[in-house]
Image (cartoon, rainbow, N blue to C red; front, side, top):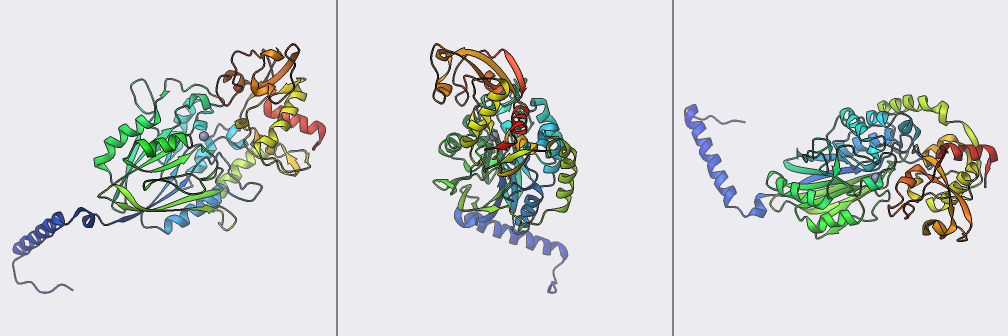
Length: 456
Ligand SMILES: [Zn+2]
């Protein structure tokens, strides 16, 4: 209740102005620590959703449940932001058949506030990433994919968001070896990828005086690039990472500066609760938890409806029975010999070779649908076939198959591997020529299972 004030209105205003001035002076005279009381900031985060729109065969994940989880967490924090660390697309038939577009449309319903590009955003060609940016209703950052004038491919190297009185600077980066990690589009057109740490350092210096805390949203190599940022760019308080599909068991902590990363495919949502000290521009405390996206989250109806509509378009193609598996294949190492056998037999080769990164999902036990193979092999890779002397073959092959140096062998691999032979996780060889092109890798495996009916 206001008390009666006998002074004229202007004196009243003057008195208030004076009072504000005194308060302001007191504020300035206070020690820095007391001035900047700690403020809470919550970062929700995900990475590598890879178009896994529906729950997996362990009943985890699904975009509709994830949307509910994000909403629930956002309702339960005072200053909250949801960051997605790249690779939203590539991994399921909806993505492969429609070049990722529907996944970005559905992704708009997840409540993402800021995202960065992942390497698989380039799988359908770099021009497609421009379309993703047009569809996304949130800013997409990329500080280190730039044109010849140094301009970001998304136009946004960073954003500043003010949340609960905290100015949060967010810098988006992608792995330096982007071109080496390309799966179907080994070109970034007129763009080039510049070094991660140097780029982060440059923008962190630019953001320092304009923000209270700096976060790097990075689709980057774990742990090399994540650690390098924490080690070499002290202005960065938090790294939210993606690209590696396995979550950190615990938050990475380098002298109070932290990095977080969670499991791929939307099976988890990360929640990082910080107390931000605006004086030091650091997190005075950080707590991290991983929320499992399971059936306890009711699917968001709008997301579920859109997912169903898109799934219905592909179901005729991919939800056809192809055979049966006697067991569940859970690891890439376990699946590789099986897939290689199928490829070799389908092309009449002595053996086939694929890199582990080619394999993107597990194979369930029991009835198999073509969809399962689409999920394992989402890339539109073709098989290529060549004849080589045993002595010509790289260690990647001779380590795993008995090979005589003078005998000639017919070998199958993918067109992707053929064009990336020198890359460390590929054949680790140079110049093997595979002159013949076979079927799509995925079609070869589907056909092999259809013919045999049983996967042992
Ligand atoms: Zn990635």
